[in-house]
Length: 179
Image 1 (cartoon, rainbow, N blue to C red):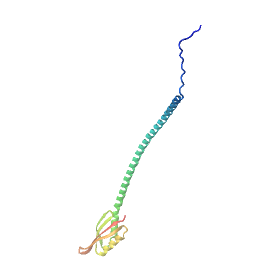
Image 2: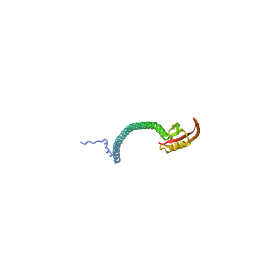
Image 3: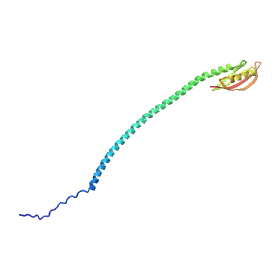
Image 4: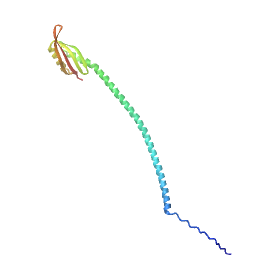
């Protein structure tokens, strides 16, 4: 017997193949995503390395800043010590200088002249003297001018007067002490 199927048969349609541009687009997207993931990982690791390097450099800068401050403090203390040393040396020189000045003034003093007053202000010296005659006064001024220790010797005034019944000359001389 022959059977006949009168029911309509549904034929299945063949599935259309995916277009090649879609497959290529998905492939390119996957490759681009993989490249982007790699680049993100690569650059994020480089950024973290740079951040660590910056943090290390900040620590070094802070440490060097402390060292610079300690060096500056040392230099300040050293400068203070040098000033103090110079002051002490100057005091030592100043302690000896009046003695040397007085010694030189007295060694240049001719007979017939005596010292009344001496004032020393830095390197400027002013003396008041009395002598028996004008020649003694001139000799004393010339002796002081000839001294290697004194400069700019000037006779400020010379006045004739009487003292104890004798005619005497009272005079004032200023000069500078050479260093």
